[in-house]
Image 1 (cartoon, rainbow, N blue to C red):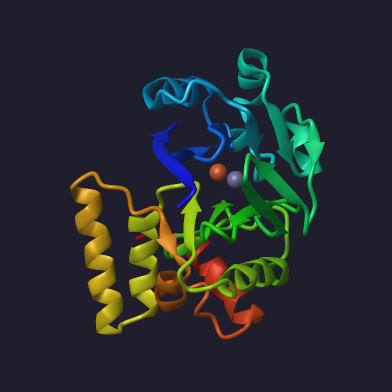
Image 2 (image 1 turned 90 degrees about the horizontal axis):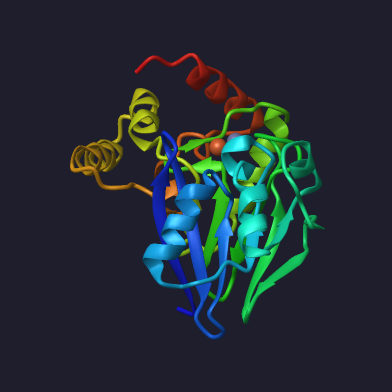
Length: 242
Ligand code: ZN
Ligand code: FE
């Protein structure tokens, strides 16, 4: 493991991620839900610097701290063009681009659906990815801008990664997602998985990160038969009161 990840809760249900390339000591934050919380995490970590912001999409709970963090640290801000709708951005990335943090290399994958420009960042060497609001543990992002077909393709790009890949999702929505999953899936292993989620939340523990293996096995959106079935499930979840 050459990348260290510090995950912290912020805003009402976001996770922030402060990461360090151990070879060089360079530090990045994935999204900027809250500048104050990111700065506090830099302080607590003792890492002492911020070199880079990796934005996944333009929503304010992912870009709201860009301006302040740039002003305080002089870091470079990297993300999709759409970030400019909400916040400063230095370098635009598109599908297939590589972003370096010291010796760590992140591959950019376009994953439209939640927003049209949403990207995710994966380090193949570290077997992990930061997936923003595309896929959640047992869930997926709402379709604010894209079509169900786009989101279905985006989810399947993630599902095609190695099963061992760790997925860092940007929100703690898992208990509510688990209740929805149980409404569609009565397998005993689904029930056991959901019970483990509920118990973790009762203890105040995070259910993020997850893995490609767990999501392929339990995520009701990845388990859809096709794009039309996915669309029906996404619409059902939007109206689900569980
Ligand atoms: Zn979002
Ligand atoms: Fe979000």
